[in-house]
Every structure is written in structure tokens, then in C-alpha cells.
Image 1 (tube, helix red, strand yellow):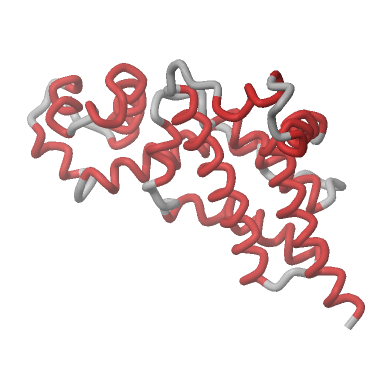
Image 2 (cartoon, one colour; image 1 turned 135 degrees about the vertical axis):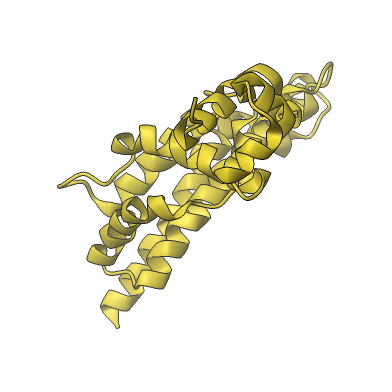
Length: 207
């Protein structure tokens, strides 16, 4: 039976959920496919290329959910995309770790072109548009990495307990309470990034 690239990628994604990124080896993948490991090199020059295609496959399967839509403002699209990414990065085991170490494959170029065009139409240069998307992507990835690392901590409530200490630090206690009212660190950081992009665009318009 001829081994197809798509089958290799889909099987690798399934194995990712079962054994995690650390357990996903080419030897294990080949065994799952019923072939010898060298057969995989007909489709991928190394494991990193396979990992890149795994992320691209998952992105492509959901690209209609984060592509720009007609009539949607550029800033609202970036915000919606960031929230969509945050939710999507927890749908597969170790997906955020996988995403952090991969790069888009050439077949993702048309979708990325559409995203860059959305921001260029708003007034950004192509370089600014691409960097806006990249910065937002890295922000979301870093946030989810930090969040998942925090969830693995046991028996440590951090600074939150300061609110219950009458002789504690009043400003810190007030800050912790207000942070929740502001929507938490993800939404606050998101607004800071988008506000900065809006300010850059506005300054060019005034000039």
C-alpha cells in the first residue's frame, strides 16, 4: 500500500494526543503506519518538517474560523483571531509546544497573504502588517505556555492569598481585585497590543 503524506500527518496528530510531543518519534509513527522509519523520509526530510506540516494541517482545517471576513474591522479581527488561537491551542495535547517550534509551510502562503492584505487595506505597510500578526501570534502562544505551566504547579496559590491578610499590602490586594475586573492578563495584554497598533496607524494618518 502506497503511503500518502496526508495520512502520515493525520496519524502523527493522533499520536500527539496519545503520547505527547516528547513521545512522538519517527520510529513510533512508522510503527503505527505499519512501515519502516526510512519510508517517512520520502515525504519529509526530517522530523521538523513533519511537525511544521502537522501545525499547518490543523490550521488549514480551521482556517475559515480565523480568516478575515468582509465588513469586519482590522482590529476586531486581530482580537477575535487571538481569542480563537488561545482556545484552539488547548484542543490537542502539547499543541502549544508544537506550535512554538514550527514555521508555516509554503501551502499556507495564500491564507497568510489574505491576513496581511486585511491589515494593508487598513493602512499598515506590508512589513508592519506581517509583524502585527506575528507579534499577536507570539503573544498568544507565550500566554498559553505560561498558563499551562502554572496549571501544573501544586499547592501554591501565589500572591492571591494576600487579599485575606489584614496586615498585608493594600495596593497589591487592590491590584489583584482590579485585575479580575479588567478581564485578566490575557485581555489586558491584548488591548495594549491593539491600542499600540491603532496609535501607530493614527500617527501616520495625522502626518
